[in-house]
Amino acid sequence: MPLNSIPIRPTDLTILEPIIGKDRIHRMLATASEVTAAMSGRSIINVNSTAKGGGVAEMLHWLLRYIRGTGIDVSWYVMDGTPEFFALTKRIHNMLHDNKGDGLALTAADVDTFREVSLRNAIELRAVVKPGDVVVLHDPQTAGIAPVMKELGAIVIWRCHVGTERDSELRRAAWDFVRPNLENVDGFVFTRKSLVPDWVDQERLVLIPPSIDPFSTKNRPMTHERARAILQNVGIVQGGVNGAVPEFTLADGSTGRVNRMADIVRTGPAPSPDMKFAVQVSRWDRLKDMQGVMEAFAEQVDGDRESRLVLAGPVVTGVADDPEGGEVLTECVEAWRELPHFERHRIQLVCIPMTDIDENAAIVNALQTQATVVIQKSLEEGFGLTVTEAMWKGKPVVASAVGGIQDQIVHGESGLLVNDPRDAKEFGSAVQSVLDDGKFARELGANAAQRVTEKFLGDRHLLQYAELIIKLI
Image (cartoon, rainbow, N blue to C red; front, side, top):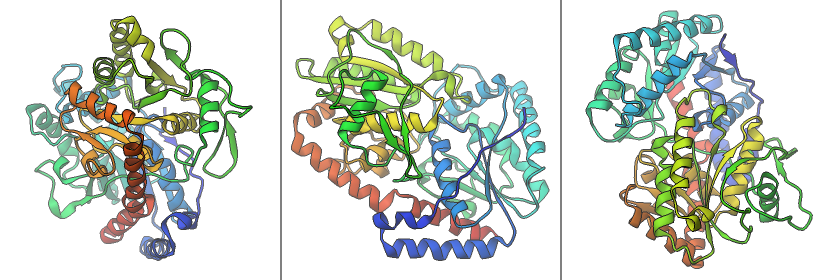
């Protein structure tokens, strides 16, 4: 199969002005003019491994719309890979997080698989890349494309969204596998300094934390009535809501409707929408520790009170570059079945449909809007987009003090950080404190929304990329 070209609909930057103010808008527009002048007929080409189902794809959908809205020529391609290739890159992903994943070592045969798929995609990409174009490659899956793009005369930026702060044999082995492809790239972009391997040339390194778009389907304001209608329609909560229909607002301001139902594992009927809900939305990935969230909630969060846990992830067939999703979901279901009956009744596992990415985003929006507390108990996390999404909605967040999450949340002020993500008691205590104290929860949520406005919206993200591109050209 050929590279898949993803359509990009232009979006005017000035729609952000009511949120970020005139000064920030003027700076963005001035910088966009500088980039346009510097580009002088060049194009920006982004490549990653999936168009849906992960944070990278989600960010590209809206970031590239804003860039296209300035008149800059930007495009996005999703690479084609074999099952063997994606099993290999998932292994690399796990190892970069000091996780043994499938337990297999990296071999000479893996080098051949990686090179073969990378070369096939690079040859396809040569048809659209000109000398002097800027090629932005995202994450280890794309690293093998870099040498061919450099030979072609492109300016190559490799953007890494993943990794752990811990040094280990697994991490070093994964970097040794990827590194030969990246020796000559023009720029490296990482989320935070502690995730950067020591071989990366500091002169070519830029740190750019991710961000969210307040106008995306997932982040547009949603009333509790509309959120309840959506969750009732997909089967997560029971009952109708005063005639409200499961509609949502798309990024362009038009109206969509949630028609598909979620796949749900639970005991008994759906809970009342008036319950207190703890929610974690993540991929079915061992590093997100969905099973650990479930078991800690069952053991440590008071079952006599009216609280429920929703663990939600994508339908596992909808994420092409993550072959472990089905295994992780199966493990979670099996662990759920081992819980006492009463605890099973308090916890539901939800697979959100992926056929329509806007419908999927609306369901996530509804879950975060309805949540009393949002959880992200990741074992490793370069940056927690779901953390920032929930903070933007004014929700208290309980998250692990790992990776970029430490930069997102100020503990006790804009959320709660759990020092050891494997400490069920510490995690349960933090969740319970938010469920029990509405005033504290509201204060955390208000501070969280303000922090996102100041630090984690798209204008800062786009400006940092613009400065890097101007420098490299």
